[in-house]
Amino acid sequence: MTPSAKPRVLVTRALPEAGMARLFEHCDVTVFSNERQPTPEELHTLLHQHDALLCTLVDKIDRPLLEAARPKVVSNYAVGYDNIDIAAATELGIPVTNTPGVLTNATAEIAWALLMAVTRRIVEADLYVRDGKWTGWSPLMLLGTELAGKTLGIIGCGRIGLAVAKRAKAFEMNTLYYNRRRLDEATEREYGLTYAGLDALLAEADVISLHMPYSSESHHMINRDTFRAMKKTAFLINTARGSVVDEAALVEALRTGEIAGAGLDVFEAEPAVHPGLLTLPNVVLAPHLGSATLETRTKMAEIAVQNVLNVLKGELPVSLVNPDVWPMR
Image 1: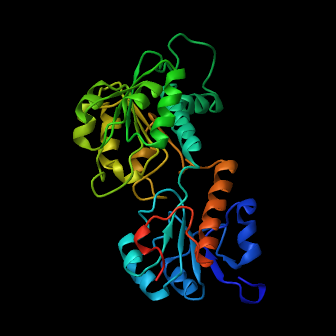
Image 2 (image 1 turned 180 degrees about the vertical axis):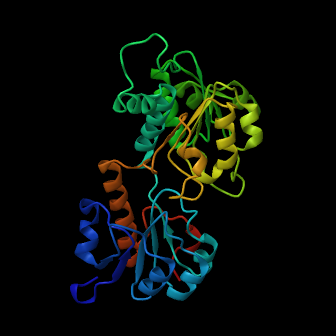
């Protein structure tokens, strides 16, 4: 990559400058916008003029786009990659990369922030004070739920699920987990975990935190039937993917008291939110802030950039999603 022949890289959204420095140094970079993502038509037009793509999880990278533009690499600024047609990219020999392992703590922290906010009614309390309704201390005012001695149920116990479980020990909670594959005994002991079937976890947990990846199998995994199986005093926390929860069923469960509350960082049709959620006091809503710390977002940018640079130099990227394309044809 000589200065006279810098490859052209399209970045769909402005990312932290510290993480982008090396990309600007080695490539001719087009950053679409800080305000919005490109439309499919804009993305299609722009990508034809570039050698590589650094996109975000809200950019749909489908077969027609990949077939038409044939980028040398698609670097996804996210851990998940369900926004990309991986099968099409693999058929076309296009490496797809992601940014795993760096947002574990940030996402675990937002899960706990939502958990604490909804169980202790922090958002309701904040509005109560701001609206001038607080006239003095009262024994029955805004009573919440204490966590010590309660049971946390984790569905999907990968890196983030384990980080959530680690924090549960400090709150003196019992922790059940459900995974497609059971963890080894040493890990269970280290994190204070007890394996449970899904039905048992739903029935016993006071708080259920979702951390499974999205797939056709996990689509609407949490639905009307699972809400009926949960305790009426239970809370649901979702920092995984919006579509693992049937939002319409969640609204009904919250409205009728089938469960006590929910804390959501992700939604089925982001940035749209089911209108029923907006009117309910027993749900805390966040605009997909899971990885939203300066430290994590900068590190994600550094990895995404390194992935682009490696592929453009003919080197194996740091985190290759579709290894069948390597070595590149």
